[in-house]
Image 1 (cartoon, rainbow, N blue to C red):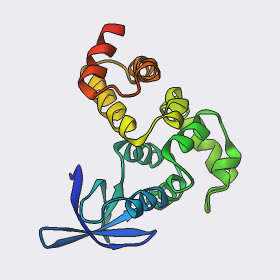
Image 2 (cartoon, rainbow, N blue to C red):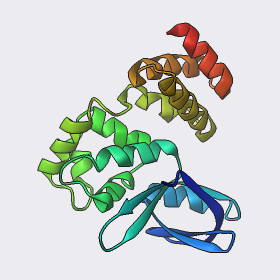
Image 3 (tube, rainbow, N blue to C red):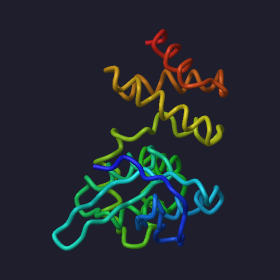
Image 4 (spheres, rainbow, N blue to C red):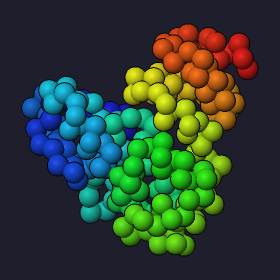
Length: 196
């Protein structure tokens, strides 16, 4: 299983990116959200977190600009009736935080606006994922930058690996980042541990 692939962008369009890593070109399917971030970033140095879908007729790679986007993708494909391409379309509907917020708040209309997602599928996504997504911190991400999101994601992953629940970790980190938006990963983990 691959965690990420880094390299230079050999080809980029809204459906996929080709990353050149030491002479090997990896064709990676991406969402519109990831496309926007890649288009604005450095073409010579790119890193995509990946998910490999293995089917009888193909091995496909799906790439994400952040671990958080990949986590949401993995949750979406657990929902009955949502395949990898539908999940990718949902992720392209807006920033990850916005999609998470729509699910957490039961916004059927937003999910139905995605091509190929009907009312029943939208409701199933909300029912299945409402308690699993990071709805607790949807407001946090709208007021902080990409660097803070990266620090937040890494600190959250570390706390969960240490055995704390995701919800408890999110609450502590949200409070921390509201008070200290420039905090680094190590400080965030230490201070969050004191709060739990």
